[in-house]
Amino acid sequence: MFVQHSVHIQHPVKVCTDALMEGPRTFFPGRGGKNVSKVGLHVAGVKIRKRVVVELGEPVKTATWTVIPLSWRATFPRQLFPEMNGKIELAPTDKEVTRLTVSGMYQAPLGRLGEQIDEALMHNVAEGTVKELAEAIAQRLDETISGGSRPK
Image 1 (cartoon, rainbow, N blue to C red):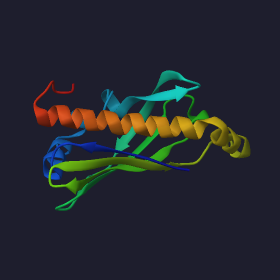
Image 2 (tube, rainbow, N blue to C red; image 1 turned 30 degrees about the vertical axis):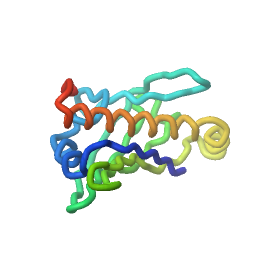
Image 3 (cartoon, helix red, strand yellow; image 1 turned 90 degrees about the vertical axis):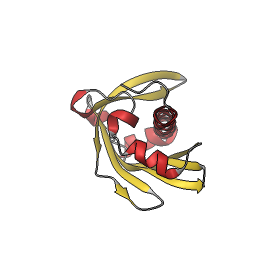
């Protein structure tokens, strides 16, 4: 299954890229030691946080866009949650606005039963998780660029 969410940041793409290139502690929310982070899940209207192992690849950068490969998987119980492989992308919308997109692919665990659960409920959870992640990264980049409180 494919999931994607885009957010506009009111800064030029070069400025956003420079902030992104400072490293994951600058832009990736909830990041602890050893690549462990927490992502927000919304299940039946209830927000829960799930610990995941996050791996970020090397950024690929051109004059107009930047892409960072991304994957994450649940720390426990791994068999019940899919692994997502995707990317964080920055691209210009115009001279002063950058579009940040988080997108990825995952396969529902547990075979056919997992596919049915995904269709009924979990795809919405995946979409909500990617939306929250994109919005959190955009906010942290904006705070870094604007000189607000620096992320820890």
